[in-house]
Image (tube, helix red, strand yellow):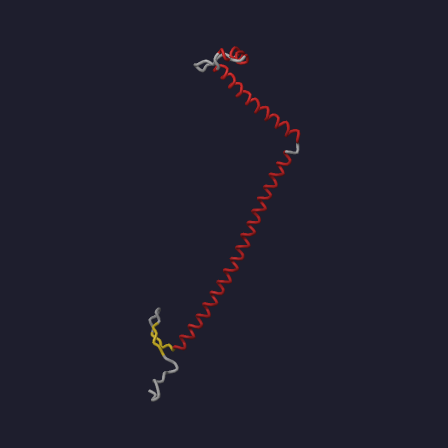
Length: 153
């Protein structure tokens, strides 16, 4: 013990450590432990840095791969759209054929509508009392046989 203050401390304090795997007891200095800890910290920093760089490269590569796949998908969709539009444009290059087709569709619709209107007129003619029927309704009632109740023609 020093007369002027606390006791002097040794420059290198020694610890007794037991290795967990082998159970051996060893004398280890604090300086050696700090040096080992510093080495392991440097190693861990290198590992983390390499992992971050690898993650960034993988992320960039994955983003580029996804971007390229999206671009290819969009190009394929545009190609399909162009194919469909081209077929539609070529189909309408025959204006006379288009007109004929539209006229046939209009005639068919008119026939359907005329049949519906005719059935409605006949029904109204039969529903109108005889003394209130117009000449057209009277002629309709005389020319159309009444429908049979049993459903036979």
